Length: 417
Image (cartoon, rainbow, N blue to C red; front, side):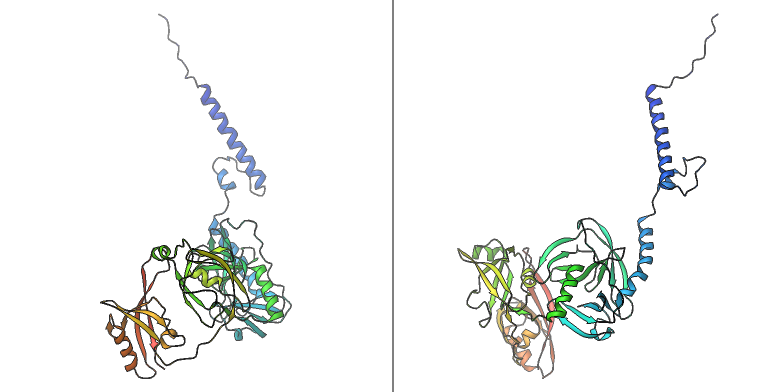
């Protein structure tokens, strides 16, 4: 009888190649760990501690360590709630929070500019200011640190910024828009995690912008040399271009003029119903864009493209000094009755009680005092019967500036002198 031979399992060629590749990969990783971390002791068996040796510290751990190191480096740059931008000049932005009064800064000769919202204060010299940050890639996500001025020392808050977008601005020309949700408050000084000054956060009509450090330094130099600028006015009001207004005017983009000051710089150029399509060759799509772009100093010229029916032309509007309307004791409202709704505002007298309360053409008054859906007569009667010094609660709705329409409810108070 023939004895059967025991057969040994055969390992396939593919399996041998796979095992050899895995071994070579582990060896390569171990060698990489020895090169990158020569101060770490070599493991007898590299398999288990291998990934531990080449693993980097977690992102939040890194950020905590950097923030702890950053605080003592940043504090010497602050003089009270102001930031030193020159060895002998500190800067205080509008809306810097508690202690933002220039009188709280230990310095002298404060110079405030209402257009830029900055105040420069001369302080004792001797300390170099932070270095400005000059980015190479604005779209890269990054952690930044917001230093929020307080009456004592600033509060540091890490913020994750997905990207910064370069936009133009009438005052700064070149600023960066901060994405919504980045939690950078207006008035905060913003730094990189290595203590370079990114800029200062300012409140624009459509969100937060970052004014770069280089622009801040240039503005401080200009402010100290030339003094504050006088805010100018074009003398018009605008509202959103709704689909119905677009059909009526023949325009596809822009904002429509609702009021022209007869004594303003646009009186002989623009008329109610004109559509402003662009300003300085940039398209306008919402009223807040006009508000931001038209905030210019006296003497500045805005080039606007205007549509009036089928005619389109580009004209220059020169900002004139703002006129302060005399304070009036009158209600100052021309109203139209809306049955079961209230009273629509057709006109607001400048300097009147309604003007001071912030009511505008297009608003609909839905309540005055305790009267709901008041008629025009009821609104005037409530104001006339109120004693001098009284404040009357007013609820109203205001058309939304967005193209989707809708009304925004709000309340105000009519103060009777």
